[in-house]
Each structure stands twice: as C-alpha cells, then as structure tokens.
Length: 497
Image (cartoon, rainbow, N blue to C red):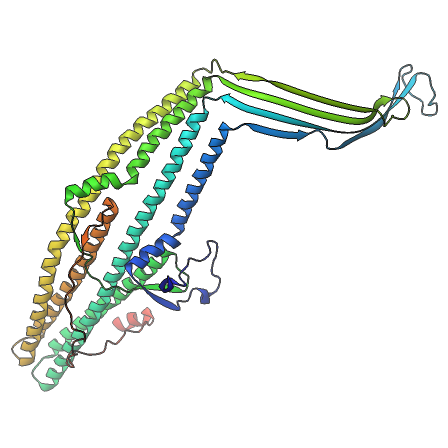
C-alpha cells in the first residue's frame, strides 16, 4: 500500500558501512494492522521458514521420483584415438638397437580411431522402501507448512505485543510531561508564596524534589519509548534509517466474547502444534517401515545396450590398415533380484527404535494438549483480572485528579501544605501509570487469546463522543517542559560532592 511505501526490508546480506546510512531520517507512524502486515512481508525469520517449506517440497518431489525408471547414457571415448608401436625380443636377453633386422625381434604397430556408447535402463518393480520414504517426505512437507503458520501467528503476536508496549511508552512520556508541568506549577506557587512570606523554604525544597522526581520519570519514559520504537523496527526488519511510531492511541481493543470452555475447544482445533506431533508419529512409523524394507526382496528390470565402432588395427606388423572397420552392437535385458536374508537383526532394531519414537511423540502430544489449555486459561484469567484493574485504576485516576485539584486550592488559600500537594501529585501520576499499564496488559491478553484460539470474536467498545475542539488550556497549569540537557556525568558527580 501507498502508506507503507519505502518500508521494504533491506537486502539480506546488506551491511551499513557509514554513520549516514544508519542515521534516522524518517519517523513513520504505523497502525496496528500495518505492523501485522509488515511483519508478514519483511520478517527474515518467516522468509527462512518459507525456504524450509520449499526445501521440503523439493525433497518430496525427489522421493516421488522413485516410481519412475532411470535411463543413463555413457560413452567410451567419443571419439577416441589409440596409436603406438611395440618391439619384443624372443631370442636374446638384450636387443641391439643397431640391428633392427634381428630374427629374434618382432615389431608391431597400433592405430585405431573409434567411438563407443552405453545406454542403461533400470526400473524398480518391487521396492519395499519406496512407499514409506514418500510417506515420510509428504509428512515432512505438511509439517513444514504447519510450522510456517505457527511462526506467522507467533510473529503477529510479537508485533502486536511490541506495538502495545510502544503505546504504553508513549503514555509514559505523556504522563511524565504532565507531571513535570504540574510540578513546575507547584514550584512556581511555592516560590511566589515564599516571596510573599506565607510559605517556608521547606515548601520550596519539597516542590523542587518532586520536580526532579518527575523529570526522572519523564527521562525513563523517553528511554522506554526509544527502545520500544527500535524493537518494532528490528521485528519488522525496516530500513536502517526509519524508526516507526505509534499512530493509534492506547485504547481497549474490545470485549472478548467466547467463554473459557469455548476458547479451549477452539484452541484444540486451531493449533498446528498438535497436528505436527501427529505428523511426527506418522513419520516415525514410516521410518520403521523403511527400516524393515532393508530385509525384504527388491525386484527390478534392466536393459543394457552398447555400441562400439573402430577404424584401424592393433598389434600388426607394418602400418595399420585404416580401412579395417569393426562395429559391435549388443543388448541385455533381464530381471535383478536382491534380498538381504540376514543382517544380524539390524533392520528389526531400527524399526523398533522408530516405533518407540512414535510412542514418545504420543506422550508429547498429551503434554502439548495440556500446555495449550494452560496458555488459554492463563490469558483468559489474566484478561478477567485486567478488567477489574481497569475499573479500579480508572477510579483512582479520577479521585487522585480531584484530590490534587483540592490540595492545590487549599495550598493557594493558605489552609494546606506543600506536602499535601506533593503527595497528591505523586498519587495522581502513579494512578495514571497504573491505568496505562492495565490497558496495555488487557490488549496483550486479548491478542494472546486470538493467537491461542484462532477466534476473533471481539466486541468493539463504543467510542465516547468527544468534542471536536480540544479543551481550553489553563494558563495557570500550562507551562513549558524544559528538557534536561545530556551533559557529562562527571560534572554531576563533582556537583554532588
């Protein structure tokens, strides 16, 4: 899509060599559905699993080829040339080079030009190992495809969880800025009252301490935000100069409709992990049949055809006659029988081992079944707990906001202390943080239930009707947030001493 243009994954073997190649120049806002789409397209882990699927498919095709005959063509020099001479002495122990006409000496010559070819045909009529090998390869192919789906769904869950963490970190930054603004207002009021003679130096110190504490919270929030953004960039394998941001605000995904029992039954039918274990049982049984096939008879039909044609003569006295032609055609057809009658019990032992492995996989199936139910129950119970946490934390947010407002009014009226304002402000900030964490955990639990069960029966929450215009800013509390410069830590250590 156009909104995702420029976010293609870089080349697998690309490696930046200059700082300009990793300098962030694009902050790209992404929605949750866009993140899930990008992780499916860009993830190198998913591409590796897809390559394994193709490998398993090629292996299956290679095993299916056992049903077909084989045809081999070979040549014995195409063409070839042989020539030379040989001298033999039949009478004396030594041959004198100065006497080539010695009656005891025989000299022969060879000069041949020719070509030869062989055509071999073979077809297994009976092969006890053919069917189990193909069955095992087919099960491996199905298992690889299931593993692709498992990896894809896990990556979608990881992407959604990372996106919720990014939304939570954005909330932490927002809450930290609001807390710094509130602390700045309190410090300003405390200094004004100190100059007016109605407050003490202790009130100013308490306000400064709270401001420093809130600035630290804002710094931690900015750190988590930066790390969350880069974590999504790593997961999505984005270009080196792009950092994603959250385009969606932190809101509830909706209400999970299925019951716990419906969720568990749906998970049993949805999870490919169980199917893979059943395939492991089938693969082990096929390997057992393959081992037994080693001691069963093999029957094949063969045909060997040969052609040779030469010009010339070999080992003749005098020059070879190149007009002498020899051409040979031959063909053999027959059946081959191979039967390993006794192997010391090796095949039986290997078959027994594979059947024991099949039994082991049945126990793993039982363990995985229990694990799947536990994962669904864990996510479901956690979701119910987060619903209660949302209710309590939302109440805390409303009550602490009102408490902070009243404490600030009491302090400005001279009937309250700065300590009351600081405590109320800290409680309000903590309540905001807890509510944001509860929203993030709730959405994560919903995403986990989607992944574990394959269901998407989530009733969307009815959005509240908000005014089109933003609320008016209060000039009393609307103060700029001054960023803390990143200086050398050695200077801080010198000041503290």
